[in-house]
Length: 330
Image 1 (cartoon, helix red, strand yellow):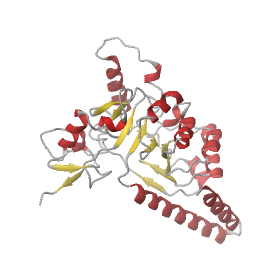
Image 2: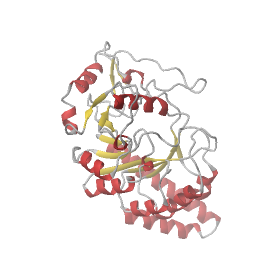
Image 3: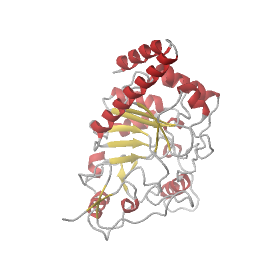
Image 4: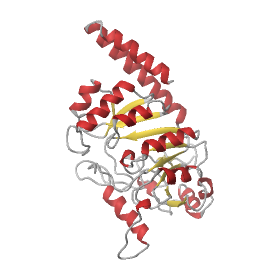
């Protein structure tokens, strides 16, 4: 896969040097080829279980459309156990390689490991080493990153990893995403363009891409995700509608044909949270320090959530989520 990816880029670079027509022809073929790879990846991985790793607490980016304040406040409250004055342990705020490998040993190999979660993954100094460790242990890997904290040396180390998906959150020209585009970021962008990743995609939430991205990659084909309320955890007046509760039977849009809820988030302290929308940590399934991941699905919190998909009297964040799929009764 990696060899085919680089060989294709080399051929298209040669074609692009044949003049204006060659340039536009190579540009068209590249994005058509890349889009087909992405579509294949989404089709093959729909409904597959994953654990998204939140490597650190407190995201440097502080994007306008991300409820970081809610997440940090609730997480620190959980760590304090009700104490008025509490000082979190460093290992509860940042995952290092040793801790990650212990958690990894409690996650089945048929799960994909996503480097994403509730903050920028590469704010953790050991993130690249964690990716390499997950790959060495036979896990499928995806990454969702703003590239903040990732350097060109990291890109070179990661260039041999067969990512199922490598999604770059493109900085906006407007200051809504708060992603810093400095000299280090430009160096990283140039390294990505040079070495590339299979299944590379670009996405943003609002606004036009930052000029630095356009300068390096040309006219980007970007998936614009828009701004969502994060299952009722975020409301920006004038930029999104107020969250509405969905009644009746529902399913998760990640896997609408099943009641399994196995797209979970791992936090630095070992807590496993229901999903990527649960910034308020309303549905914590348990902790990997106490048991393996599959054992969490036998505990009462998970069973109650599954029951709540069909029982309207059980209030779940899922009922306020844009991914929720309403099941019509026959």
